[in-house]
Amino acid sequence: MNRKHIVELDKKYIWHPYTEMRNYIDNTDPVVVARAEGFYLYDQDGTRYMDGNGSWWTSIVGHNHPTLMQAIVERTQTMVNCAFAGATHELAATLAASLLPRCGASFSRIFFSDDGSTAVEVAIRMAHQYWQNVGKKEKRRFVTLSGAFHGETVGCASVSGVEVFHNALSNLLFDRIVLPSPGKIADDAPSETTWYAQAFEKASDILETRHSEVAAMIVEPLVQGAAGMLMYPPAYLNSLSKLCRERDVLLICDEVFTGYGRTGTFLAHHQADIEPDIMTLGKGFSGGELPMAATITTERIFNAFLGSAEKTLWYGHSFTGNPLGCAVANATLKVFDDEKLIENLPQKETALANGLKRLSKHPWVHDSRRTGIITAFTLKDPQGGDKAGYLNDAGWRFYAEARKRGALLRPLGNVVYFALPLTVTVEQINELVEVCEQSLDAAF
Ligand SMILES: Cc1ncc(COP(=O)(O)O)c(C=O)c1O
Image (cartoon, rainbow, N blue to C red; front, side, top):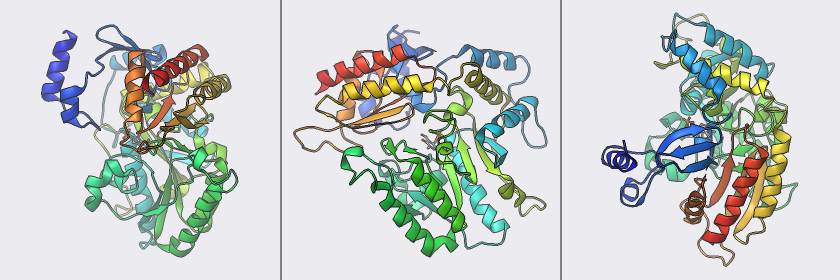
């Protein structure tokens, strides 16, 4: 089918996510992805694009990695789906056994689901029901960071705080307690040593007075992605974890974005040397290729659900433990080992650090920041004016220029970021930086 016809059918019948559809139908020429390979997406017309956002942060080993594709093809010969209650299969069992030791000594149980939002939904339900099961029914509230993003179900939206996304839902969401974000936009921070200490002080005050009603604290470890790639140090997370322990509040680390090496370690929270009670994985968990996610917890939580129907976690999805998803998740871990993806990160981090230095010379580029290979900067008009915020158009002006030059860099408002696969090469990073330089010059 030719490109024009695909776009016509699309605009006639499809409702896209996070999209103002009037503007889309009238003004947008979408990328029509025909093929994907490694760091690149190919349009139906043959144009090659660098996938700078890693297809919504999912592409962790590059597109169509041969190891993952082989696992998918092999699995389609035997079994693609089966129910996961009262039944199991080899791929789920081996995935659990191979993944859990990489996550940390305290984690011992894995619950499979479909995507990041369902993984967080499971975490919320586990934490809430845990306290019901152990007889502390008053502990039912959740504490979250301002600007947090934990997904799109009503439960996830309740513990999230990106207002543009959830304003229309506000009277449907459950009540939460919001702590100030420890995330820093570098140039605005009061000082290197105090910015997150102030956020921690507030956390400490709130948990001191309200801990008896709090079930769990949920955080995105080290990087608050959708908030605009706000970054904070492991020391904050370490102190927060101790505080949660002291106050008998469960700690949930949502590693849907930060997991699988993006921050420089397999999991971001490893840098804080902590043992959360619950953790979520998605996106890179299945190599970014299939909808598959997991919620991981400890024996303490698991044991509280044993022995009676009342205590059971009555929760699941049709595709829980999907064999194809498990096959690709197993293959993803194999690629991490075979290609030493974590061990090889430092050279890529150096290339990104050098690239950021180059980009920071442009007058519109501010607050450049990086954790591992997650890299971001904020666009601000040097003449001042209304150039801040999520609905700001500076990011889209940059996006248009970068697209013309072969890079897809969908912004978060006026924040431009890279979420690259761990398999990206130093040459590809340099090529992306080059395109950014040219696009900045053309856009501003
Ligand atoms: C930290 C975090 N948690 C949860 C989610 C939701 O994941 P999904 O879009 O796969 O439902 C996201 C999505 O970006 C995320 O960044």
